[in-house]
Image (cartoon, rainbow, N blue to C red; front, top):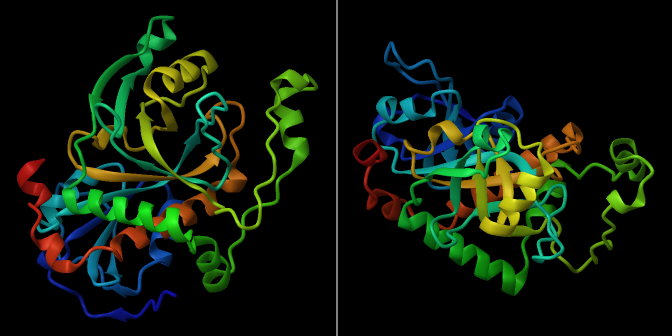
Amino acid sequence: MSAWHHIENFAHESYTVGWICALSIELAAAATFLDEKHGGPTSVPPNDNNSYTLGRIGEHNGVIVVLPKGGDMVHTFPNVRIGLMVGVGGGAPSRRYGHDIRLGDIVVSAPYKTGGVFQYDFGHAIQNQRFRTTGFLNQPPTVLRTAMNTLEAEHETYGHQLTMQLTLFWRITHPENDESSCAKVCGDDPSKLIYRRQRDEDEDNPVIHYGVIALANTLMKDANIRYNLIKEKEVLCFEMEAAGLMNHLPCLVIRGICDYYSDSHKNKEWQGYAAMTAAAYAKAILFRIAPNQVEAEKRIADIS
């Protein structure tokens, strides 16, 4: 449970973890998981317009930064060595490919063929051309990939405790499913509805999925393009907030699913819960990493 002690300011050089979010609701979720909240930055360069929240997460001093210019963080906090992009995204469920992704689930970027996160040119897609891959997010540092693999193996063996943590410590539960909501956006045509069985009590809920996240600077609304991306790239999640940072910060991307398809099923009721599940997973990752492992990584400022 977060202590939220306000204590003295720390030197900027003492912060080694960058936690990047785009929305105020994501910032609120991230701040909730701080074990200690520190004072604000002692000084910020004139060209850095970011807003920072500082604190301790486990044994790590972390910088929580809100977009638009997360890349400036490494100039103000030069010793940041690992980065997490944590927030909400749109799920890409596919019965054909076995991706039973539901509201509140978590998607974590994991390498597939060329990388765990790629950016595509949505402008070409709008012109009825094939989507064009325009870049790949740099691989996260080895220490993050190792922690992710360790956590995945633990969860496969023992399950996870994220739901219990959210319920007991913060009294957060997922919103009630509204069966009428799909009818509102899909109409009365039953062919447009996707029926899913309820998850059993002994199954993990939310489920954590590992795979490809697609980035674009425009909201994914075109169903045909969406399904082509799911088919050809095995995309699990669509995301637009992190697109501008992909060439600057080698991060692990973690997304709580707040809408089903990034199209007509936009669902703000789930944003808060999805942001919290993503933040809970991010904290679990950091608890699998020792401070000396972070210190062994290169500074992001030296490689970005």
